[in-house]
Structures are given as C-alpha cells and as structure tokens.
Image (cartoon, rainbow, N blue to C red):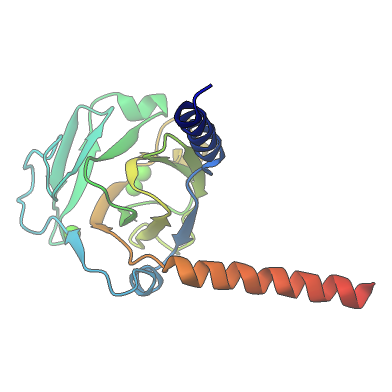
Length: 222
Ligand SMILES: [Ca+2]
Ligand SMILES: [Ca+2]
Ligand SMILES: [Ca+2]
C-alpha cells in the first residue's frame, strides 16, 4: 500500500471514530426568563409576543420570527385576544382536543440553540404535558412539564439551551382533569437566540480540574 493511501485510510478511520463518538446533544432547562437570559451570556435574542397581531389573524405556518413558525394537528392556528388580555397564539378545531392528542409544533429552520416560551391558559387541575425537543444531530428528548402555579392565568415558562441547534419543539398538551380530552393551552413570548458558547479552553480547564479533584479524592481514600 502506498504511503499516501495508508495515511488517507488512517485519517478516514479516525474521522469515522470521531463521528461515531460524537455525543448526542446536551442541554440545560430553565424555568424562568431571568435564568434563561443570564445563561445566554450576553447574546442578543428576538421575541414574538404576538401583540402586533389582531384577534383571529391566521398564524398557521406563518414565519413570525426569522426561521420560526408554528403548526398544529388542530386545524386553526390563530392570534387570540379576548376580553382585554394580551394576545397569544392559540390552536383549535372542532374535534382534535377531544381525542386527547392535540399538539403545537414549533419548526425552526435557522440555527438557534436557545429557545424559550410561555405556555398560557393551563389549568392547574390538568395533568402533566410533554415537550419533545428535536436537535439538529437527530437526537431528541422528552420533557414532562407541570403547571405549578395557582391558577390558569399563571403562565408556565419553558426554556432550553442546547449544545447544538434545535430543529423542532412539540408541545403535547396536558389532559384536562385526567382526560380523555386536552386542556386548552396557548403559546406566547417565543424567544430564539444563540447562546454565547463557553470557550473550549475553559471547558478543558474545567474538565482538568474535575479530573484532578477525582484523583485527589481517590488518593486520600487510598
Ligand atoms: Ca402576548
Ligand atoms: Ca380547559
Ligand atoms: Ca385552559
């Protein structure tokens, strides 16, 4: 075998190993905007609060932020503004919620690794809902969420910052009083950003320190 071919083969093998060893996306969850915002590390963000829309405006698949849109298995996805309250995004139709599998899907075509939003109108007597998050590397995670506020007017905050871009978030609504139908929830204050990454050198130092700490613990025990 020629030397250059050998080098190419060896390099390819190392690359394959590297690809195979790439870990699935890691992430951190946040339950309030203050914590989420400070974890962005000073990165700018854009937010859609839907206040620029009128009640009944169609939002189905509308790109309301660059690269961000919402669809649903419910037929209507609209701006919702009733009785002087602020405007949010609400989906509905005649029958889907009765089946108990109503969901909202946030599709993200640009590379954002940080997303947060409020879930509105979630009655405390309903059960937990599930947030499915899909990352660009095709890995995904399922997160169970509960309404911990005292009333239906307390929004539930969901924030996530991941090690790589988030492609899709699916909010599977909770069941109303245990089911079979879904509790009606709505989405508001959808934020996307790219968190300022912690520099590689800091990670190396941190993992080195962690290794040293483990070593000294073992030595002392020994
Ligand atoms: Ca709003
Ligand atoms: Ca309800
Ligand atoms: Ca409700």
